[in-house]
Image 1 (cartoon, rainbow, N blue to C red):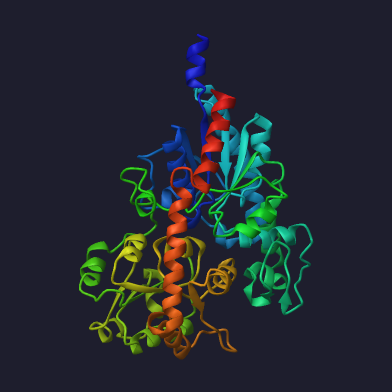
Image 2: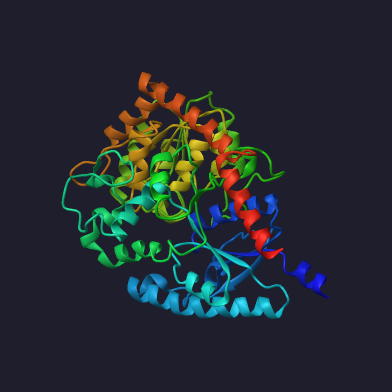
Length: 461
C-alpha cells in the first residue's frame, strides 16, 4: 500500500500563467523542458474565460484545469484596474484552493505550483496547503530589476530626473528607457502599484525562474541573486529552434490567432536571401491610426520587400487601398508563424514593438531589430537591444510621440545596408549561439532546470 501511494505521489507540478499568449507560451515551453528533464506529471492551469476564448490550447500535451478570475464571461476591461485586481485575487484564491483540494481527493495531489508573479496571491494558497512554490517571470531581468528597485523604494516614484542611475549594473537610463508604468507612474498610479506587487512574495518562494539566460543579463542577474534565488531558464522557445533535444518540439502549441502559413512561405521563398523586412507588433499592441499610417508609408517607400503582420483588429487603420498598392513589393497578413519566419533565410531584419517574446525569439535566431516600443517593458527591452546587446536600433519619436516615416526608413536602411548594420548582424549571430549553449545539456539554463527537478524528486519521491 505504501509503495502504491509513493508511485501516485511522484512530483506533480501545477503551472499557473497569467491569461495572455505572451505569458502562457513561455510557461508552456518551460513545462515541456521540465517533462523532458524528468517531471512527467504537470497540470496547466488557466482561467475559465481564457480557455473558452483561445482557438488552440495545448491540452494534448498536458492535463488542463481552470480557475476563475471573477470574469468567466469576460468584461474585465470594463471595470477599474483595482476592482479587476481585487476580484481576481478573491475568486482566484478560492477556486485555486478548490482545485488543490479536488486533486488531493482524486489521489493526484499537487506538490508544487509554478505561477506568474502577476498573481502574487497564489503564494498564499500554496503556503496554506504546504506546496513548494516557484515564481516564473516572463519578462527580462533588466525589467525585473527596475520594478524591484521601485518596490523596495530604491527607485523613487514618480521619477523626476531625465537621467537615472539604477542599482544592478545598468547603463545610465533616460526616463524614456524605463517601463511605461514607471516613467509615467503619475498618469496611472494604480496599475503601476499592481505591477510592483509582482515582488510581494518573491523573497519567500522556494525558487525564482526568469525567461532569460545568464550570459545575456549576467550583471543584473547576479545583482538580483543577492535578494532572491534567481534562476534563468530561457530562452523558452521550442527546442527545435535551439538545442533540438526535445523531439518534434517545433511550435508553441498555443495561438490566439490562425497563421496564414502557406501564403507567407510561398512569398518568402521567392525573395532574395537577407532582403525581407519583417514587421510585427505582436498579439497585443495597438498602434494609433497615425502611427500605422507612418509605418505603412515608410514600408511602401523602402527599396526592400516587406512582410507585415497586421491583425484583423488593426486592419481598419491601414491607408485605403494599401494592400493593392504594395502588392508588387510587400505582403500584409493577419498573422504568421513568427519563429519559422524569423528563421527563413530571406529575412534580413525585424521591425518590432520589442515585446520580450519577440525580442528573445529574434535574438535566439540571429535577426537584428528595428525597435518601435509601444508600452510597458518594451522601452527597456529596446534600450538593451541598442546599447547593451548591440543587435539593433531604436527608432526615435517626434514631439507627438510618433515614429515618422523618414525615421523608420532611415533605421531600416541602417540595419539592412550599413557597416553598423553588419556589426548588428554579427552580434545577433553571437547571441544566437549563446542562447543555444544556455539550453544545451550542462548549459547555464539547463543546469538550473536540472537542479529544480532534482530538488522536487528528492522531496517528493
